[in-house]
Image 1: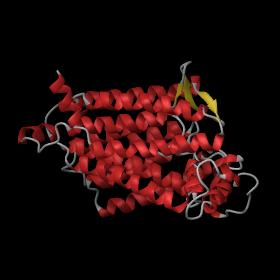
Image 2 (image 1 turned 90 degrees about the vertical axis):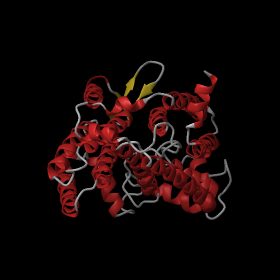
Image 3 (image 1 turned 135 degrees about the vertical axis):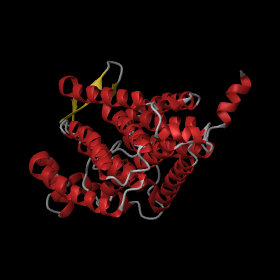
Image 4 (image 1 turned 180 degrees about the horizontal axis):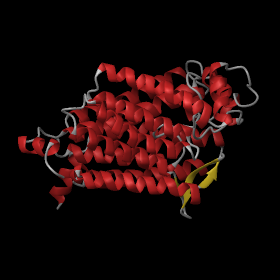
Length: 377
């Protein structure tokens, strides 16, 4: 039994796991420092402990059952039911019914739906890798994503909807799409944005985009958050003001400092040097995810790992982009740093599955490859 557990533990990519710890610590220290209250940090710490336990537990499971078509169908169905249930029992926060209250805690189903979408797309593309150039597969996979996208957008949760769309785009590109289909996707994006502008976006969402284009049009209103974030980041200069001495965050000029704009609060306290270290840590994390993905036993594992890499990359780029005013504010959390248990749990579940796949990462037998593409599952 001891040898069995040791074998499971040794299969963990310890570089990948250990690099998450300083990122988590940075988030906790920033929360505690700028609030002067340990409640945010304490609650987040409990979620982190629970998520790490789940990470190690999942890494010891044989997850090859995820290749089954029945599992993908179940994940798709359950996600649709839960996302639809939000319209009836969703807990309203900041004008959006994105949460389900379970008494002791609340959770955000859209986070788990992102992971379900990665598994569904990995399964779909792995079975059709040979004829992926057929645009029919791009359309069908796009329909799966579009259903999730619309349900999440209607809550409304623009940030999560955009992340789901970008996950689909990233996995389509990784799967081997042709250049002409890339142009078709670009045209689809332009068309989709136009339709959303006239028929999908709420007024406050349109105003955020207008403020992105014209930053100083409403710095006291809808552009306030982004404006204060850029001030906080700039005031950190090279070495930062020191932990607990960030004036923009500590004096609460910076709104949503524990979630959407924790990068700005961190930058003010740690400065340019801290931000460089921050990006190096995330770079190592994403590098290790990609390395593990390339060693997948079959196309499913490879595509899943690629999807997880895209998941972290787009979260990072969108969150940092809206903090430094390169992108509109969409309410996207920063991986492992922003306050919130659901996204922390989802991130560790995603990595836990990747670690479980790592245990049987080896060149697949010819029969396995044949079954992956042609055989019934």
